[in-house]
Amino acid sequence: MTNIFIYLSQFDPIILAIFLLLLAMSCLTWSRALHLCWSLLYIKRQQSHAKQLWHQQETLVAFRQAHASPSPKLFKRFGLYYHIAKVGNLAKQQYLDAPSEQLSLSDFLASQLTLYSKRALPKHGMNLLATTAACAPFIGLLGTVWGIHLSLNVIGEQKTATLTALAPAIAEALIITGVGIAVAIPAVLFYNFFAKQYEQLQTDLNYFAQQWHNYLLTGHSPAHLSGS
Image 1 (tube, helix red, strand yellow):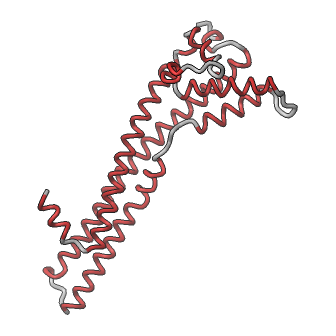
Image 2 (image 1 turned 30 degrees about the vertical axis):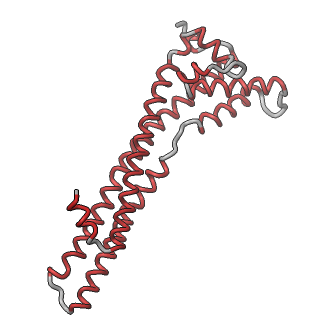
Image 3 (image 1 turned 120 degrees about the vertical axis):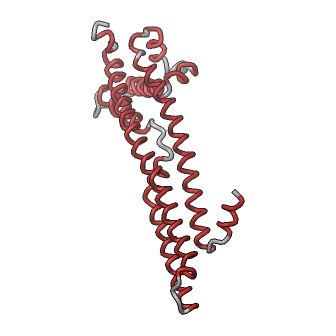
């Protein structure tokens, strides 16, 4: 470890600054990925509970009262799905209190539920992953260009192009290039993975919102309609 610090201390100041920037981006990428992974697992558990909701009459009744008598216990268990039900309940109550001449109850519920379900997923950090994936290689390339610039300065000062004279600057340039790529690759993989997972969750949230919309209109759950 000491040798690494000694080696880094010999870097050109600008090369070292670029290296530290890439290192910071890498740390942020991994920490954000871990946070997104935890959030994903938490929402997956909520999704698993929500699939059983329609077969739990007592819980279903509590969902119908989510806007009037919020339950922290149910919110902890069902999370986003419980909040979707609450939004739907409030929208229905709002419409019944002040009916709209332009929209039917069904359309009003659909608009409110769709609006919330599209914004419900916590995607904080996806922009960071995308930015890191896009920018890290170019930041590394900036270090490469600066390393070449240093090499040309050495040639100009020493009037020679020996390997001994050029090796330090070229080595720094190649290292920074590799670091930029090494930072970008995990960010790309993380972004693609989480984008796919959140797309699937978004589809499920939209489907649940549609089911709750139908339930508020008809009073019949999907389990009841299917004869379960």
